[in-house]
Length: 120
Image 1 (cartoon, rainbow, N blue to C red):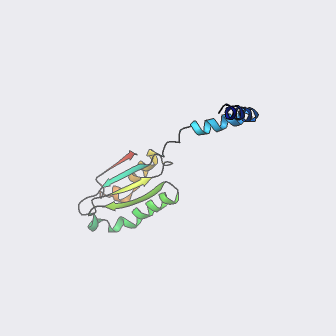
Image 2 (tube, rainbow, N blue to C red):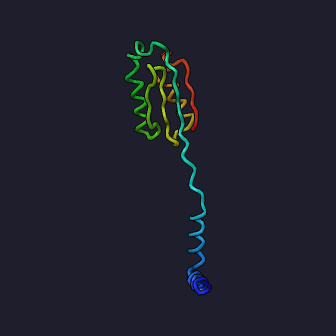
Image 3 (cartoon, rainbow, N blue to C red):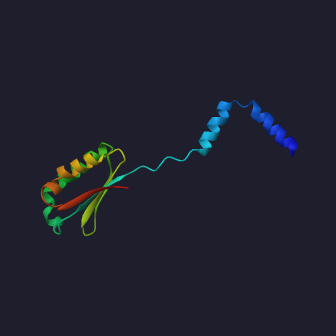
């Protein structure tokens, strides 16, 4: 057993200290925190399906533009539909998300009486 320890010590002595430090630091460092996504949630009016027609193309075009810019990850309605959920990438700021909602034809034309932004 002592022979194995002496051998390990002689091998470790030949490895540069900088190499030992980098290996030790990598092994001991914590993984990076998970990315923080943002959620934009809409609450729709009860008769959204009847009212959305004139605004739907512009509403979807706005979402596709945000997606093409790498800001919006995915979005869609839920329920009957009762509302919608937009998942925003970590690079999207809260101000950008709020500006998106404020410019959305559904919000402007009263189809979304309430909306909010939250961070995961």
